[in-house]
Image (cartoon, rainbow over all chains, first blue to last red):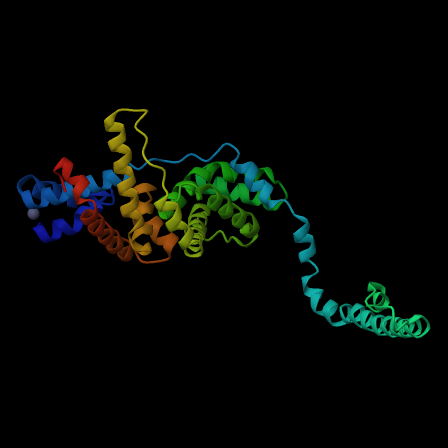
Length: 138
Length: 187
Ligand SMILES: [Zn+2]
C-alpha cells in the first residue's frame, strides 16, 4: 500500500469506518515504517480529540414540561380557526358597522348642526364675546 | 428490542392517543438534540429553546413520519434544519450574544481548568466559523459520533460527499486551531 492510498484511508481508520481486516493489516504495516503517514494520522487524531472533547450539555430538568407548555393551545390558536373566514367577515361584517357609523354620523352631525343653528339664532348676542367662544358651541 | 423498533412502538402508541409516549421520546433524545443545536449554533443560551422548538415540530409532524428511516434520522434532520433557520433569522442577535459572552472567571478552579475552558471556547468558535455544510458533517461525526452512513441518510447525500466534507472540515479546522493544537506539538 502506498502513501497516497494510506492517506486516503486514514480518516476512515480514525473514524472507525474500516471494517476489512486485510486493509487494516496493510495500513498498520505501512504506518509502522512511514513517518509522513504516521504524522498525518496523529494530526487527524488530535483534531478529532479536540472536537469530540467539547463539553456536553444536559437538558434542563424542566425541558419536557416546557415543551408541553408550549404545546398547550392558547386563546390565539382558537382565534386562528377564524382566519379562513376573515375574508368573508371583512367583506360583510366590517362594512356594516362602518356604514352604520357613517349614517349615524351624518344624522347626528345634521341634528347637532341644526341645534347649533337654532341655539345661535335664539341666544346669539353680538355684544357678548364670551358667548361666541363658548365651548358648548364649538 | 432495538432502539429503532422501540421508537416505532412509542410513535404508534402516541398516535393512538397515548401522550406519555411523546414524553418518553423527548426524554430519550433531548440531550442529543440540545448538543447538536449547541454545536451548530454556538449559542448556549438559546440551545434549550431551539431544542424545544424541534420537539414541538416533532409533535406536530409525527403523523406524517414515514417509517422509511429511523426516527433518530428524521429527528436529527429536523434539528439541523431548525437550528439553521434560527441562525439565519437571528444572525444579528447572534453577533450580539457572542461578543457579550461572559468573561472567564478565575475565582474557581485551577489554571489548567481555565485553559481547558479557553480551549473549548476556541474550538467552538472554530467550529462555528466553518461553512454550514462542513460544520454539520463534523458535528455529526466528531461530536455526535454517528457513522458515515447515518450522516449520509440524515443529509440525504452520498457517502463520498460525507467523506469529502469531513476531510475539508478537518483541513479548515486544523488551520484555525493550529495555535492551540500546536501546544501539544501534534498538529
Ligand atoms: Zn506513507
